[in-house]
Length: 332
Image (cartoon, rainbow, N blue to C red; front, side, top):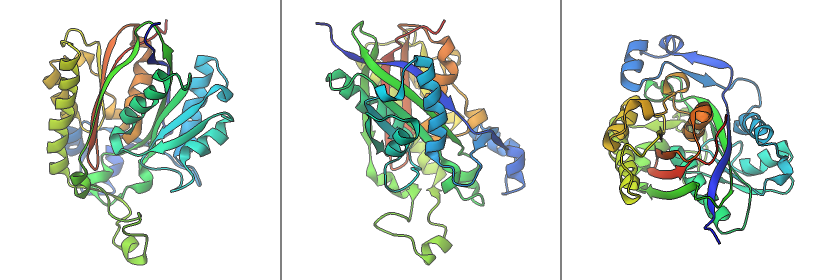
């Protein structure tokens, strides 16, 4: 019997209509288009507008599009892993909310919180359920409404983040295609440099914490940049080395879209040329859990069956990791 791999069989994405440009940000904080572009590579980002809309609402658009593409009904989904830093609620899980909204009556699910590395962690976790034979259709969703936790008077964070959601369907494959390997890492000492200071059980919401704006994302840019450049690049190179891959073997690098300089450092460390790197940070900014699936969605038509693809991410807290997969289908 052939070994079962977990293969991505469909991808889809969604970004809100509202475009927040660098020019508009210039009217909100002390910054400039030139400063933002030169340091991050970001020109604009999407923002979810509308009363009562949350991360699950973006996911509904993304997932319904995926189901239509794949030609299946939501009732066929067995497990939903929703990777998000901005869940609709502390509880219930956004995965459960999404299942109800799309009619996935036979699915169980949970939220996975690993900051910007969440989608990588989610793919590796979902693959285990496929490889074990437990499930045949696992939906991994990566999405965030980062605008809900961003202080638009803090130029260290508001210039970076945007809203968006992407998703991937995992199914069994016996041709040797799909997820081949993953390397996942965490270092909790990073919680002081990128995270949210209040709102959890350690520091529940109070008038004081709200007045101090501690319910927004907090980042110490230089420290985070240093850790991200080193760890994201190293883990991508490590997964290549342990799978005997050269730069010529890699068809695509799909990096987390946090900063263009971090993306460039990762590609350089791997020896991969820029024409093999998926980059959309200039249009969407950092959508946290949404960045990697949004890239796969936008590049789907260019991917070929058997392509060697390396995914790499780094997130707050700190988390980082890499996934090596062989693409399982042609779109044309």
